[in-house]
Length: 275
Image 1 (cartoon, rainbow, N blue to C red):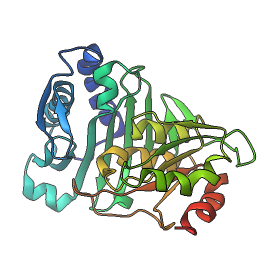
Image 2: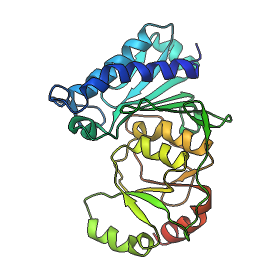
Image 3: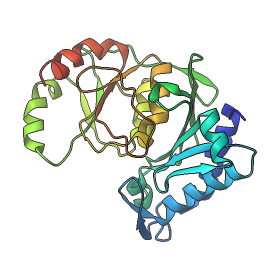
């Protein structure tokens, strides 16, 4: 069974219906066990993931689920899932700390692949858990916000560009010093807390750049946003300027640079060539 885009949207809406009432509540923020992704899970994370698993179990599907909390789990028949190479990569709640404290910037991220590499991702959905807006894309068919086609902005470095910067605490001052000349060229810096949503913000033209230098950045956080961004005309690449095509795995982690098309050359010259 090939998962169609409307089914993926329905899963995201199910998550919204269960999670949205818990945003900013003490009940949602109760800490639980440490998830497979490495972070300490909260009740709101576990509820979001359970909704996804239950939604999948209700339909006739065989796939490998890669999820922030439980890691890797086969849904349906494992042998059939391995044969058809269906993979669903999800972050049930990207921006958990924002959600727990009532900061309105969190999402559910769902990417569907046929294969075992990032380039095999065919469909993607990111739903804003505060507004219910749905970003979605199908490979080769463009990207959308709800029912409207979206595209990255046309701004270049000479204009008022917004960018998000996510740095590791290790060597923080060294990284800031290295980035200072670049930072001075941009208009505003944002640190928002949901990688999936930020990639979608670039896709719709609300921001221009996302520089994430954290080696611990997880595939589950960005798998859906990567497809939405590229289908909207943007680009995402590694710190050495190469295409990101890695294994679909809970253990896959990588830093990246994402931007609109007009800033690719500038960022590669300023960041990649000076590494």
